[in-house]
Amino acid sequence: MRNKIVFIVAAAAIAASWIGNYAYSRAYRLPEAGFLRHYIETDTVPSVAFDLLYVANNDDKRKPVNVQIDELPELRFYPVYVHQQLRRQTIYVLSGYYDENAMPERTEEAEPLRLHTVRVFYNDGSVKEEDVGEIVVHREAWPRDPSEESLVDMMSAGGSNQHDGWATIRVKQPVRLTGVSSVWLEKLGDALQFELKPNPSAYPMELSKGEMLSLNYTFNPSRQGADVLNVYNVQLKMNFEGRSGEKDDYIVFAHDVPYPSEAEMRAYVREKRREAE
View 1 (cartoon, rainbow, N blue to C red):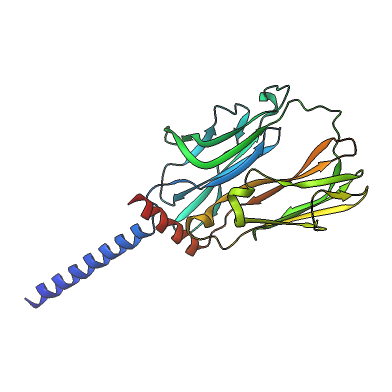
View 2: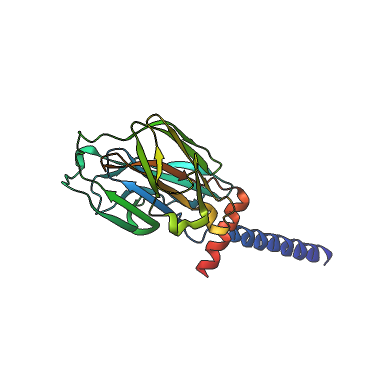
């Protein structure tokens, strides 16, 4: 009888442990793999386009292998690779570029595209339209006019994994800086901050030939919940005007790609699980 009681107690302990482990495991699993939320601004010129980040549980078998966007036939993607491996989740990257051989000719600039979904091809043969956030695509005239010359020269630029970056330019002739613009400035608000050095007291700011101008940007690191894993690819355009009224935008590419901690990933999973309930 005593052996039977011991057996029952042991079985109950094992069952409780199994149930606890199962519940614990489920609590830290994404209910569904998917793309992070992206805020992307891009130009259709032959070069790197943008990255799309996808997060899945480590034991998920299905993975994305390619992406297509009907409105951008020139867009191609390199094979998927791992961006970050965490204890229970993995973040993958699909890195896009514009194929010069597939670029459609445009005699003048077209209206920007605003895209929210992409067609995703998976390794199991399935195809699905997936929400990726928002992609704003500027469509310039192509091929570019070779006679057009920039009003400024780039001197240095860079960024870090601490949510910040910079660019420094030198003016090639007397110009006026009329402002800094981006399609994302109003929507992002305090999530993206920038500073010019020298800091203009007002626009327009007059600059002499050879003068230097720097722009530093910072993405707010205090974002909470799922926002910690947002992907930003923002074009900060320094708007210049020459002596004859010619206009030129120098683009500072402000990128912020997440490298979440285990705690931040757990918070992301919890929020996704609440959304799925």
